[in-house]
Image 1 (cartoon, protein in one colour):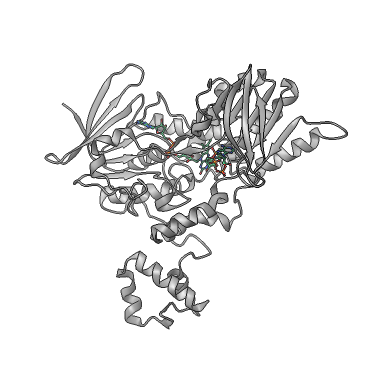
Image 2 (image 1 turned 135 degrees about the vertical axis):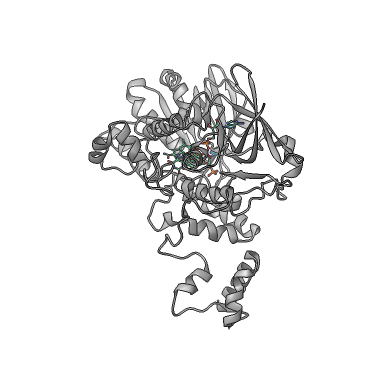
Length: 474
Ligand SMILES: Cc1cc2nc3c(=O)[nH]c(=O)nc-3n(C[C@H](O)[C@H](O)[C@H](O)COP(=O)(O)OP(=O)(O)OC[C@H]3O[C@@H](n4cnc5c(N)ncnc54)[C@H](O)[C@@H]3O)c2cc1C
Ligand SMILES: NC(=O)c1ccc[n+]([C@@H]2O[C@H](COP(=O)([O-])OP(=O)(O)OC[C@H]3O[C@@H](n4cnc5c(N)ncnc54)[C@H](OP(=O)(O)O)[C@@H]3O)[C@@H](O)[C@H]2O)c1
């Protein structure tokens, strides 16, 4: 007989693992299926010294339930590191330790199953259940189960631009497999790193540290306008809060699409500490007449890579001047980011899933995908288009899971924090709190009746009125 669950989670990245941990304390019967043989968080990037970009308080459970047994602090207690951590006095913990913490949680939960790649999800209208099929990638063994609801948490996958594909992976590879290929780098005469997100910066720094012993030439190109830092000021970080997520969600889609490219440096770019470390190392290496044997060029797109003798020739264009040049290298490390292709296991229910004109999932505020059927399909990390820059951020993991759990159980189980910021994002909120401000419609103040009925109007209508009011005030 096929096993039946209230909810099946597809994949165990931190987001679905957090959901599994929070559901453990409820009556919900859940199963989470992960394709890897054990939990692993971006394994190829677990570089020594690399840290989380969020404080450890953004663990899998604390921001929803600080008393949970699956908290980071309890992990430290159970692994006898609480005092060591106390004197460590650092909020941004090593990435290798966060990975170990997640493994510890995954091992403690009964609802997790590894070596289970989900290959198919179907919906049965008669029984009102999802049929989920998973396969062990190694043995080929297939398992099936049924679920009332499904939560997809497959994250994103490494992106290599088409023009840069097709070369031996030992020499031209994505940062996601850096640690598996680092030995090869140490044998190279010339290495080129591409991109200026945090991944490329961490790889560049690691290679820079190893350069004196290995003796290679090291170059770094990025298409971005500069080797710019990611936003890390406290007020700027308030964009990664429930309030900003709610504000962004309520905007009309075309407004969201125009805002996102302007928000690159909120989540792309280099952690200021990594940037500083790179600069200081270069400074140290260049004392006196020394040459660090390093090249760095921004505004430069790598358009093509071709094999040339024992190495590779990169064709590059400086995008502001239009100048083009060829560059030789034995090894190329591509920090060209991540993307979210459509999930093949959803093909069997694709005709029931609503997508927008750009093929993106239509996601409700509670992270439910618009689905034609009685069952509910949720998504953890759908991309930025619906809920904004906070979508892939670990700091919003607990909040999102509290919302999903409320929908799954039909009642609030974990409080969803509100009023967590000092600033406001929506005019409505600001005016509610400000004694000297009144919202305007057609240049006039809203009457009491209009104000109290305003909550019933659609977000698009409200946003449109706010735009009108702002234009008039201007
Ligand atoms: C190197 C790196 C470091 C980062 N550091 C931070 C940070 O410090 N702070 C921060 O806020 N964000 C960080 N991020 C952003 C990232 O979005 C989050 O860290 C996080 O990994 C997202 O979690 P997730 O659960 O969506 O998916 P992922 O972590 O991407 O995990 C997805 C999982 O799905 C599994 N899977 C895929 N398909 C299937 C299938 N068909 N069946 C079963 N399993 C499947 C995969 O094997 C994988 O384990 C980082 C990203 C990278 C690349
Ligand atoms: N320590 C950590 O916690 C940590 C570590 C790694 C990653 N992360 C997170 O993971 C996410 C992904 O980061 P990421 O660094 O992997 O990717 P990313 O931030 O998306 O950066 C990709 C970079 O590659 C550039 N690029 C793409 N194609 C190019 C080409 N053909 N030629 C030259 N440059 C090219 C991009 O330029 P454009 O700007 O023009 O697109 C951009 O600079 C981010 O949210 C990041 O914060 C966190």
